[in-house]
Amino acid sequence: MVPITLPQRLILIRHGETEWNREGRLQGAQDVPLNALGRTQAAEAAERLKALAPDFAAFDYIASPMERARETMDILRGQLQLRPGAYRIDERLRELTFGEWEGFTWREIRKSEREQAQMRERDKWGFVPPGGESYRMLAERIRPVLEELRRETVIVSHGGIARAVLALVGAVSPQKAALVDIWQGKILVVSGNQADWL
Image (tube, rainbow, N blue to C red; front, side):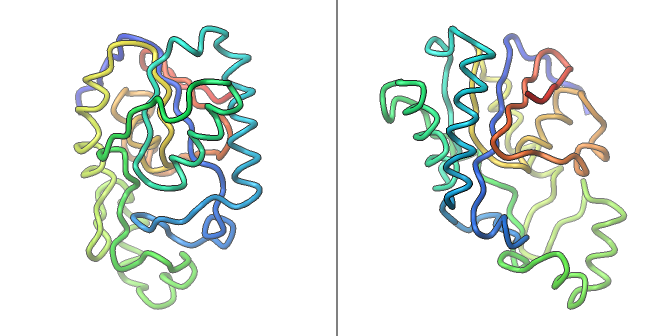
């Protein structure tokens, strides 16, 4: 994979916690709203962004179309006193789809789909769940989003998106990217091929 060189700093924020996150359920394409902790995490992300970038109002803001990401963006912008709804939605920033596995926990999948689960453990980047998509497919979907960025940008989306971005910019290998923990309510700052949590 040829790494993308971003012209400006990219700030990635994973949506706040949902009840499915708390329960360890695969959400993927399911539209699950934030829970109380998730709303607090979104507000905390705004404070981190304010401390990181006092010129945050000049940034471009883009969100996944999914409810949990849009709600996080709305809370974030409210905390920053930015105009409500004045951000773009990009369909390509939807979460990785887990297909038939959505709604289940990994424990349940390892029990009911043991062979498939083992295949995924061997190749998390390339494995395609039944009816779903792989991280490799996700990276192909979002590569154009990164190539279109022209100024400092805040993207609110999902764990899978952040992992794909880490691989696309060359911060880590694709195989390692699929294993990286992506924290809710924290900020991932991507500059060149470096990525740091704040």
